[in-house]
Amino acid sequence: MSWNEQQGSEDKNIQQELLKNGNLPKHIAMIMDGNGRWAVKQNLNRIAGHREGIETVRDIVKACSQLGIKYLTLYAFSIENWKRPTSEVGGLMRLLEFYLRRELKELNENKVKMFSIGKVSSLPKSVQKLLHRAIDTTKDNDGLTLTLALSYSGRWDIVRAVQMLSLDVRRGKISPEDINEEFFAGYLQTNPLPDPDFVIRTSGEMRLSNFLLWENAYSEFYITEKYWPEFRRNELYKALAEFQHRERRFGKTSEQITNKEIEDQNTYLKRILNAINMS
Image (spheres, one colour):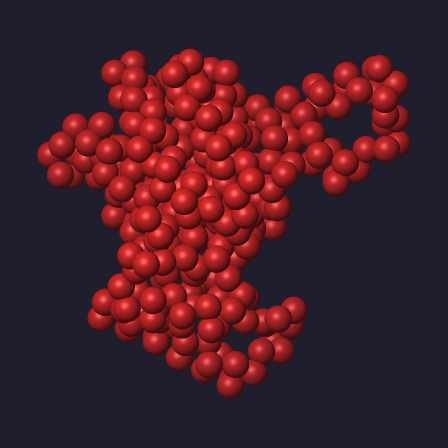
């Protein structure tokens, strides 16, 4: 089922406005936070929040694909999340398994390429099997690259990279003089991906939570008070319009931006927000 064929005219118009302005991020990384708190506010259990969060994942993946975003990385489960109650962790693993089973056919039909980062060996065997199957099935697709960060930690990946690099030095494969930033990045699990241009975090928390610590050195950040289950495509559009607004300097300093450019930026933001509110 083609996602473009499912799209309504109003949504297409908003996306066309964003595309017309250009300068969309090549790689969006998202810290999906607030499922549990959203559920508590709805008088539901935390797993119900995670279940609703999957619906947000589906919508955001579709919207990014329709917009031609090349890379989307979702912080789905951190190494630290293993410390949560066993019942919640088990529910999360079952939901992940459900997502991989249900969505693979549609993701593949829409040319999405699956990828994962993290200590995947820590996941249940059934989840590992489905994840490897999804990655293998979609490996030749040339649309959106959807990366799931599972049992992931930025510090863990950096330490892992140092260990691997140290072994190669000990074996005489490389010399310490060979090591620079680009060379080191080649040992990270994110090596096949460009660094994120734009990092979005839901639920209003102002921290990275051990997510892509090396890769986010020059990323733009966007924090929203919305919980992840509330962050559907219209919220993404607002974030993207803000990203485009920030990038209107085109290499100039703040002092060099003319009043006309500032007016154009503000007019564009108002136009996007009005279109979203009317949809």
